[in-house]
Image 1 (cartoon, helix red, strand yellow):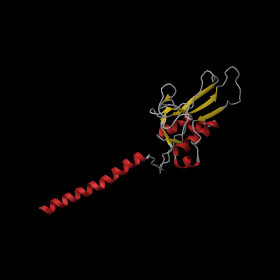
Image 2 (cartoon, rainbow, N blue to C red):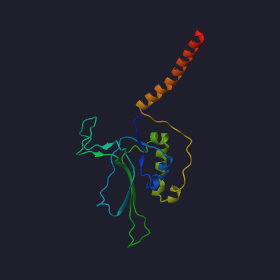
Image 3 (cartoon, rainbow, N blue to C red):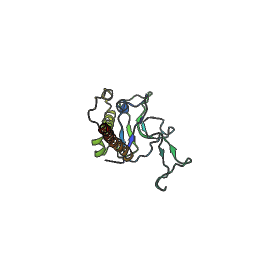
Length: 193
């Protein structure tokens, strides 16, 4: 089944956020629909810690003014942004060391698509399920659960686009045909002797 979902596999290797660390360790993929970039202005958010979670691929780009441009989109160097483009981030209010309080700061998760957690995607993709679970633990400040080592996954799915499917199909068909032709050649050689 060709769903048209985008696969996100670009994470920080060594300094990933604890909400995404287990997904990165297991090599899971996160799937979603069309994406928008997640950007923030560092000057406006001095009291907020922002951590980018994952990115689009290096070959991607963020299309500027996409609603007024004609499809298929072509990269325009002046207005578009080359990948990898951040498409998910977490933000948390910094604690004030001068006036310590017992009130927890605010937290927000910003994702570049509303389709990260649709029923179909959650049902089919363990990476999305783990992301949702980890975000809930992060919001609830249950960091000890986030640091638990992930279990081995025993459910495997294979997702590919139509081009990849055709390559696999032709390569799988080629093997029995090659064996059949080789068998006919051996039989023909034996009949000649």
